[in-house]
Each structure stands twice: as structure tokens, then as C-alpha cells.
Length: 515
Image (cartoon, rainbow, N blue to C red; front, top):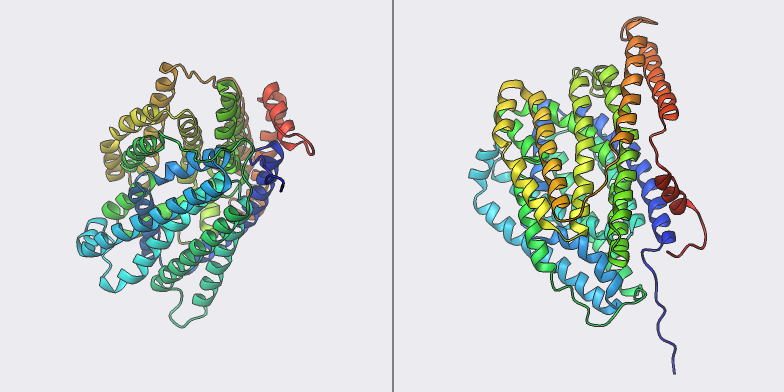
């Protein structure tokens, strides 16, 4: 008799460490490539064209979220559960069904959009003619497929695949910018959109081939059973889809499109440059590194142990890591953001410092928002997210008013208001359901105090004018003083707690831990 097929623990500590290492290395490479692409594109593309390009990408993200009908929740929550509990063949079939469903939804929504092309272009302020239907349609189709597979790869701890594809995408985009710069007409919006569409399509198809190949070859998880089903999956996915849909009413993508509609392409470009820098911080740099990696770990551990205390420990640890990166960045942009924006854009966008600083504070709140969403998703508590999202939607008139009265700074401030509303309502709703998460406010305050102290030191160094006001030497000295002051104050104040240190040691310790 042949031996039964080997079983595997897909969410062990060693698997988590391997995923984290792949994630970290990939993010570092993508950060360098992404920053290079941003610097070249904002220098070479006219502000009006860059504003349209940024708004199109925001529309692609909206298209993915709106047309998913709950598939994003399936990827984030139930792919990991099926990987744990379903035998390999059933997991592969489940995954194939979800991938096909994503394609069918995209094609149906795309057909409706193309039928209503002219009203859609008028409503968004983009004003693109029918000649743009093919590249924009391909972009939307590829974007929705690739974004879904990114979430699937994250849930399966396939960060090696996702980060390699992200790096290759940025390499190709850089080559396109370089090619456009050497053409007689220069870098054009049409070239950028076509390149984005084709690169995204290729990334989607490659990712699907890699994921399905892995799924067919991977053995069942330890404890997996035949004919496993998650009976609440569709209902939970629908509830969280309503949350996602309502959340778009005040989210960054709607904000970008609102800036485009009310303020025009030039202001949309300035806002888009600042938001692109914020996106690099959020998606690529260590300040937001753990958020995408920790979701499947949180789901797997809670499914196994049902320990809310461990979930709270992970939330506090991840947010502190984010704060250690985001708050000094907010301080640095306040001190030297104008000079950075002018250098990055070759003088096209010289006044971004205050806007970037506010956006870093917004990322702090978005980090906590993301973590609380992960907690609600892990606990299968759509009520917390639903109440918080509808409460934040009430601030939509505030968003419109602030954009109208204060321009792009008003848009950034409105995002802070909506995030504060969302976080407050979500936390209190979870607490009312018996899921009271302990948040280490004192530890967060210590990191904030260190950032404020570092900012003061950096500002003093800059105002002293060593080497002349605005000179590169002065800016570098100010940033160095800020960084050293922040590090010294963090070391003195010690915001970490013992349980967090032990968790980090457990995740980073090599070898034989199978937990």
C-alpha cells in the first residue's frame, strides 16, 4: 500500500519568517525602482498629463473594488482558511472558481463602462475620447485581475512571487519612461497608459500561471479534510463588500477624482505626486511592511487558538513598527519636504512639504484602520466595519467643502477627519461585541514625542543656515540631526513592551519552531 501524501503546515513560524524575508527583500528592491520611476515620470510628463494619468490609476483601483462583489474579502479571509482546512485538490478547485469569477465580473462591468463612455469621461473630468477606450479597457481588465491575485498571493504567503512581479513591473515601466524621454515628442500620456495597460495584463496572466502551478503541486495542509466548505463565506463577503463600497465614498481614489473634477488636472498632478510618495511609503518601505504580511498569520492563528490577546499583541506591534517609520518621515517632510519636492520634480512641484507631512499622519491613521479591518475580518465581524464606514461617509460633505475652500491641503485634512471617525466607531463597536482590544496608547505617545523632539532639532539645525538657507548641506545636516534626535529619544523613552519583544524574537528566531 502506498504511503499517504505528505501534509504541510503552511502558516508555521518558519513559513512566516520565510514570507517576511521575501517580502522585505522585495519591498526594498521595489522601493528603489518605484522612487526612480516616480522621479523620472514627474520630471518628464507635463503636469496636466500627469494629473490625468494619476486619476486613471485611481479609477482602475475603484473599478477593482467596486466590481469585485466581495472577492477581495474571499482572498483576504477565506483563501487562508481553505488552504488550512481543505485538501489540496479541493483548494485548487476553490481557487480556480474564484479566479474565473473575477474575470467574468470584470468583463461584465467593462462592457457597461464602454457603453456609457462619454458620460463617464464627462463626470470624472478626464475628457478622454473614444480612441482611449481600448487602452483604458485593457488597463482596467488587467488591473482587476492582478490586484486580486496580489491578495491571493499574500494570503498564501507567496511573497516571493508577488514581490518579483512587482519589481519586474517597475523595471519595465522605467524602460518605457526612458524610451519616451528619447523620442522627439517626449514622454506622452498615451505611451504611459498603453505601457501601464500591457504591463498590468502581462503581470496578471503571469501571476495566475504561477499561483495555479503552485496550487496544483502543493500538498494538503496538516489537518485538512475532504469536501471542506465555509458556509458563512458568501454572506460575510457580501457584508464586507458593502463596507468596501461605502468606504469608497471618502477614500483616496474618490478624493483624487474629486480633486480632478473640482480643481483641474494641474492641482490633481500636485496632489498625485504627494500621494505617490505616500504610496511608496505605504506599499514599499519598512514603515508599512508588516501589514500585508501579517494578515494570513493573524487569520491562521486565530482560527487555531481563538486568542484575542494574541491578536491585540500583533496589532500593537505592527502599528509601533509603522509609527517608528511614519512619524519621523512626517517630521522630515515638515522640515525639508519643499526642497525634496522641488528636487524630485525638477521644480514642477516645489511646495509639497506641509502636504506630505499631513499625508504621513494620514498613513498613521490608515495603518490603524487597516489593522482594525484585519481584526474585524479575522473575527468575521462585519458590523464593526459597516458601522464605522457609514459613520465616516457622513464626513463626505466635509471633504467636498475642504477641497473647495482649501484646495489639495483641504483634501489631505479631510482624509484625517474621516479616518479618525472610522477608527473610533470601529473600536467601540468591537468592544461592544466583547472584543475589547487593548491599544498601547502610552507606547504610541512615546514614539510621537520622540518624533516631535527630532523635528524640533532638525528645524533648529535648518534655521541656523549652515552652508546657506536651502543649501544641500544644510538640508542634509537638518535631516541627520532629526534622525539622531529621534533615535536617541526612542532609546530613552523605550516604547516597546516585553510581550512585543518576545513575539519579534519568536518570529525572527531560526530553526525548528513549528508553532
